[in-house]
Length: 336
Ligand SMILES: [Zn+2]
Image (cartoon, rainbow, N blue to C red; front, top):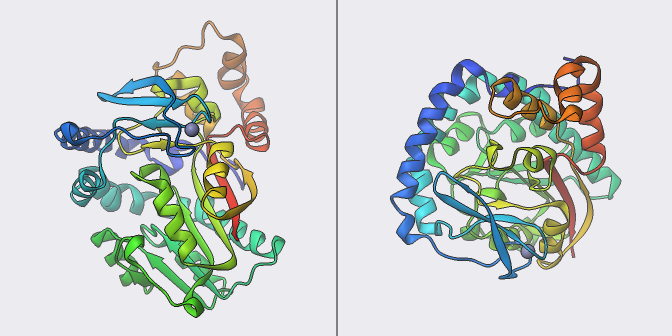
């Protein structure tokens, strides 16, 4: 493993993932009990109602918008169902107690340090002030702590509505608001220079409302950074419904174009989109090694992902990342 790269096993230790799968199965049952309360929605990016069936997994229905190629769960759990679901999620509890603590150091180095580096780089590139930073969905608090350690932002606030996680953030000395973003209000002077959220919007019933609320807390000209899965990324396109990211928690799979469109419709100027993902090739390779995905009839994938993995794997991943083909994407926007 060179300095920049990491593999799936580093952040999702194999010895812990068996029990995690059991926890997820329990959660899926808890969600499906409420299936009669699910509602039909239009495309979460462009609001078109012209979509077609794409995948079916765990008795959930995933469709693809014909206009912007966003893939989304439809019908989907309402906000009330999601709030019931996450409040007592067995899977979240398992991640908090086991997987996050066991993998936090690798996550910090390989995920959170680069996230903070990129945030600061974009502030500099787009000439944005660095007085105040708000993270929505702060989780374990690792990003905010890393940002704090740089001594650049004078004020850092973590928004975390989940009680256990909010408590963890407070115990780690962070300034925490334990509430949903729609309930949070700041005066004009108190608004933020930078608002970030990482891997949040794919979980939400209404990403548009969330993005508008993020905009509401930003100063004019302030920077908004959002990351999420790219439904047009390599492992999604290759694995289809076998892709691990296609699951019961993720309702929205945007792509760089469709999420840019949504941001533009919420009073943002999109500055750039990028897919700096590191794991696509490794994720597909692991599916092959586990016997869940067959490349014996696909000589190209067999060559890159298996036969010549040692020499080609990292370079292939870099190619995906450099060409907006990775399934982890970032959008950087400015509030207008
Ligand atoms: Zn659409």
